[in-house]
Amino acid sequence: FAQWFISEQLLSLSSKKTGYEYGNGVFALDVSGVEVSWGSKYGFSPINLNAVDESTFNHPTKIFDVKYVGTFNDQADCLDLRATGSYTDQTYTQSNDDNIKIWAEQSSRRHSTILQGKAGCGINLSSYGYGEIEGSSVTGVYAHRITHAKSDNWNGCGEGMQPGGEGYGGLICSRSCALASNSKGLVDTEISGLYVPEILDANSISRVFALGVNKQGYFCGADSRPSSDFVTKYPIQNIVIKNSAIYPEPGCMSSIFDDSGIVEWGNPSITFFDESSSNTKICDFEGALSMHENPSYFLCGFSEQADAEKYCMTTNGVGSAINVEYNIVNGANPNINFPTCGMKAAGTTATE
Image 1 (spheres, helix red, strand yellow):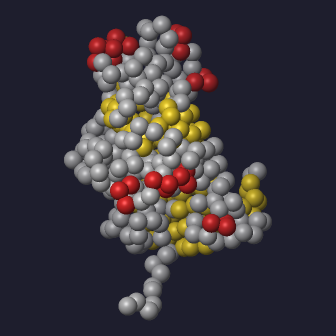
Image 2 (image 1 turned 120 degrees about the horizontal axis):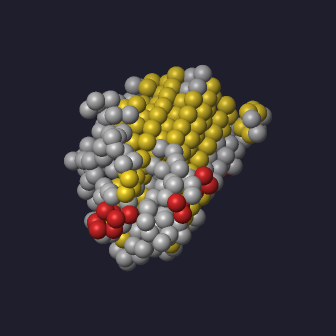
């Protein structure tokens, strides 16, 4: 039996001392101007700040000008920051697994350059449902390299509804297990300024996003855990994805899912433009999430293609195609808010 263990952590720190001031925040840990390389495959990150000891989860941490490289050879996750109010700015991260992981409330990630391998998600909201995200923001993500493939088990076009299902990955994902430790669900979080260049054929996107509950999925172990580990109601509301441009043509439809019938869909649950600067009555949707180029098109979440052709939008005008699919076992309306023109109420929900 093992008598000794070798830690492969590259940077693991915990602290409750609060004394590092930056902007309006005061942080227990400040890591700046550091480069870390060759992280090993863990299933979690070899870099963690206040991410192990639960007694430190209320003591925010800060990362500035940090580079995390050399991790494409294995599936090493990226930075783990578990403390409420943690902050990163000006980071350069290369990961073949989950890259930007938001699993603490009031988290702020700013100006992140990412190189994304095929196994994980570029932005993972709630880290499979193990963390709360309320009040968090991700601003300025520059994905200069991404290798998601539509045929891949993890991030391709397949679903994850079957027991042990591996699907429902994407550039933005949740794969939430609906754990009791994350009873608040996916709420009040904004992603803005996400940019993926095409670079000839170098970059590939499968799903732009895959958001919802995947309790029966590979990461959740629902068959082997007591029911008390899971919630019976899981809110998804006021998620905003705006001011973002995805230039490679996605290989798959984006996905909204609930394999357990427990999601309480807000109204709206997810919005795909900047409501504050838009005038939807005259079909003016500022800051809308756009895909492809010449023409670019916007999110279209209707269930009927005839509606997409009448009301969904591209930069050439009205008339587009459905680009979101739904796998919701109880048939509930997810109430997503996306650009439309010509309807009585521009900006509509999936089945309206």
